[in-house]
Image 1 (tube, one colour):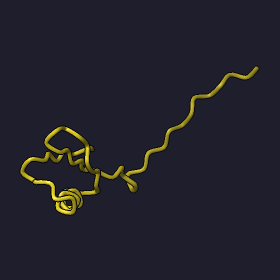
Image 2: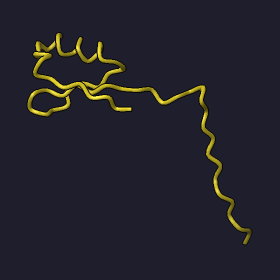
Image 3: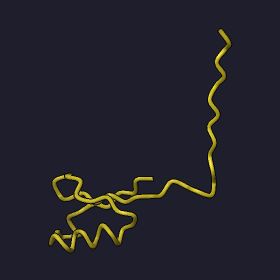
Length: 60
């Protein structure tokens, strides 16, 4: 039986992994994951969440 060759992993700098931002409410519940802070804050406004009591966390 021939020996197995290791797989080749190809990474491309032209397609970076997108960064996401998470919005947690004051009880620590994940409420939204968005492409940026503005998307998460729009979610908070839509559902009448107080942005001062929420946390935004970068997920990159």
